[in-house]
Image (tube, rainbow, N blue to C red; front, side, top):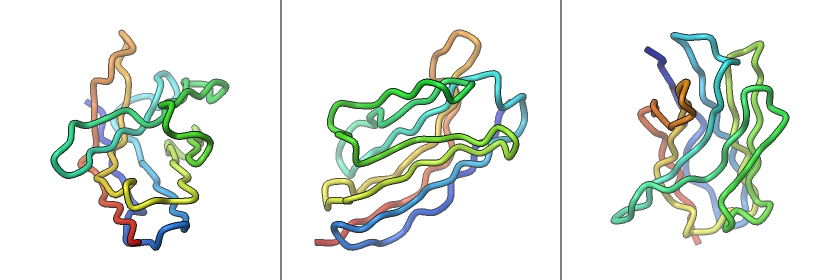
Amino acid sequence: QVQLVESGGGLVQAGGSLRLSCAVSGRTFNNYGMGWFRQAPGKEREFVLGITWSGGYTYYASWVKGRFTISRDNAKNTVYLQMNSLKPEDTAVYYCAAQGPDRAWSSFGQGTQVTVSS
């Protein structure tokens, strides 16, 4: 069983930046892809960014448009989400996610709140 613990959320003004971290434990971190999802109030949870186990390939939702980047440090069992040029519509709970052997998103953290004020 994998455990995912997010940190780094908070309140930021529009145009600002935040970096979220996700500490992973419970299994071999660098065997599987990792990603970030978010869920805004009243909306479904949506995919934001993903990264392969090696970190060599990243992919993202079309609306990201270069504002967000994902990275991972396999030595620290940690994945990061760097968010720049934040907008009020980015307000959401952000979840770290891990893929299983079948590459499905099988594990999620408890989430961290990001609030962007206008």
